[in-house]
Length: 377
Image (cartoon, rainbow, N blue to C red):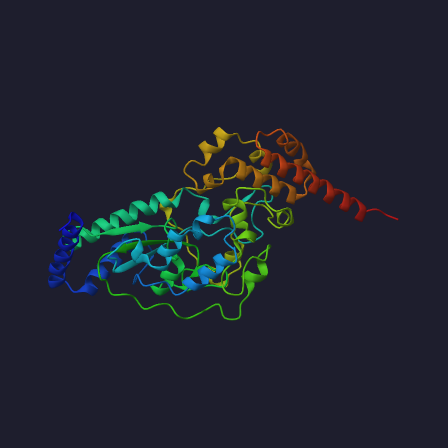
């Protein structure tokens, strides 16, 4: 018998012994209570069976709507998303957790001279906070069981269809904007999952669709990326364009980005269910304030790395971030931004130079158009 087999049988025997002392449902409720104590405001349990929307995901990939995110289309990624047991052989339960983050300001209340960052990314990187909590929760479970428990945990970093699992765990429904929505918490929360080799009783799936006939998110999306089947075309999504895309932003979409320099919240800001959203978890730290757009364009690589070393914004890297800032400046139409954009034409990064040139032309074009419109004949 192999060491792995010995470990598995040992875990089973320990768990069977635990079941003889404590009912299974009591264990689940203790885990949920501990989850809430750690800061996970919502918790649910589901099975490792194939997620209900795996065919929708496959169709989405087939149509190329994942853009350059090729890691999603690998055979390994697809196999594991279709069957979580490929991630953790022997998995019997999946614990799905939700942690709130601070909602963004209402539309129209953002400072006009500053870029906009998606609300989840305004504070310190949530991965560090949530990973530590999930580790602590696993330790608690092992203490309750009286021995080691095989597990894997993720927070948007693993090959899982998170929202599918969350819906099946009873946490909420998948809205038309593709976000998971809870009727009392809205959608401003981060999902995490812990795969366990413990047979916990699954919760009742959330089967009610509370979007109804509302189409506010679809109508509000500047790039029209939200599709009728509750998926989106990532290639047109502002979050994808400002974070995942590592090349030039398509010219036909640049003017639709507004002042977003990292991510986007529009489809959530207009969602009626987010009027119930509460304050976020204080463990994510204080907000990292943005400088005026014109000042952001001067940031050096060293300054960027220092300012955003504990922020999700670091994913864009300096060249991607300044690309976004240049586009945002172009969209302001502010002629006072021309000197800093001219200076950016000397940047070491060709992509920054190209987008700065576009911004200059965009501002001049708007100024000329404004001048023509105000001419008295």
